[in-house]
Image 1 (cartoon, rainbow, N blue to C red):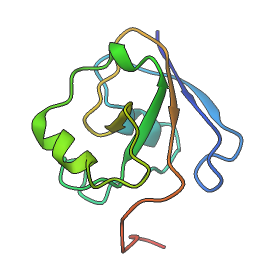
Image 2: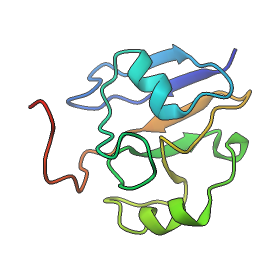
Image 3: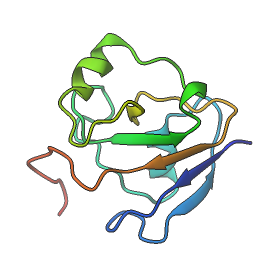
Image 4: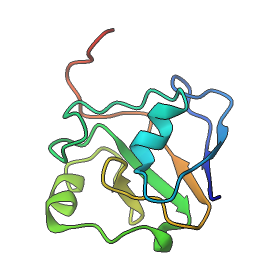
Length: 112
């Protein structure tokens, strides 16, 4: 089973985390199902950038991004060549190391 290694994030995951990931699940669902409350303002419909992550290792194993995701990523804070929307990036068989950026462009946070 592949692992999702989450680098420390000051608010969401201060210690970092190592999570067993299910192939075929999105990075976003994997994080949420394991208590890491990554923002997903559009309810995972590929309509915002709040679930943006940077894949530090294992990027090539992910499903290719589609044009809609690429267009949205252009608006993400801290965009890097290995950036993905975690709601669209599907885990395969390789381990992934991800970084959740410090900021998002979400102007409103639900429940906070």
